[in-house]
Image (cartoon, rainbow, N blue to C red):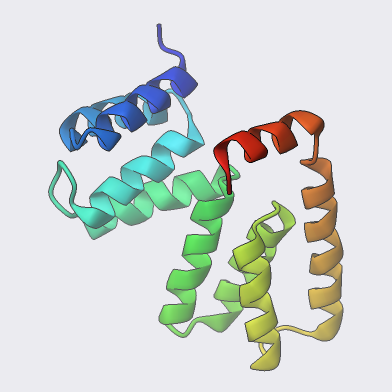
Length: 152
């Protein structure tokens, strides 16, 4: 009944069955309702061309919407794209935001940027503290039980 999270879950069920067109329909509905995971998953489908025609422009549009909306993986992916395009300052900015949202891969990427001279030691240390605070804020007995049940 127009619940974006439920629509994303239904999209995931269709995706896991190989029904990419069905997944796209559910993810698109979730995105239209403002769900950032829906935008991220639609971007992935446009990138891979699963169930729909590959479309770089639509891929980037949905990826950017998800990143702006706080989706840490989308933000990390934008950092990767900017790095591949040798726009290191923009790449670092995306990775800093993703790391502050708790994305460990973004923090690792920042260490690489530090070794290449693209981020200062002070900015890296500040980001590391924020990253750790985000990780600590996400800890709970329920999350630990779920992780133990489902695995990493």
